[in-house]
Length: 123
Image (cartoon, rainbow, N blue to C red; front, side):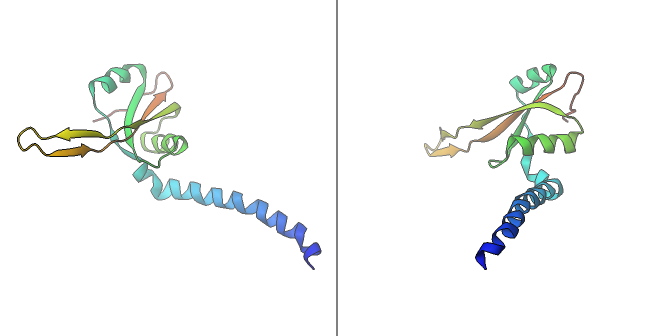
């Protein structure tokens, strides 16, 4: 019996990963976009780079480049040329008045490169 059922099972298992990938994409399109982009990073360096069509965003720790690209595509209606992701390290801080030490949490940021002529308006 096992010899006759092997070919059927292999065909079904090949179709299953494709269906699972479609489910992941639909989850990303429906509710996953909201957690990918946290906020734009508004710093002196980031505002200088906006002139060269490079925009900087704080993103979720588990966000991938493909998720960031699709989130920017759907939220800002532009097509990114390239995305680079950087891990921001956490830093130790010290309160001068009380002397207590703490930790400033790190995070993850993404540089989104747009095609020439495309812009994002950041309020």
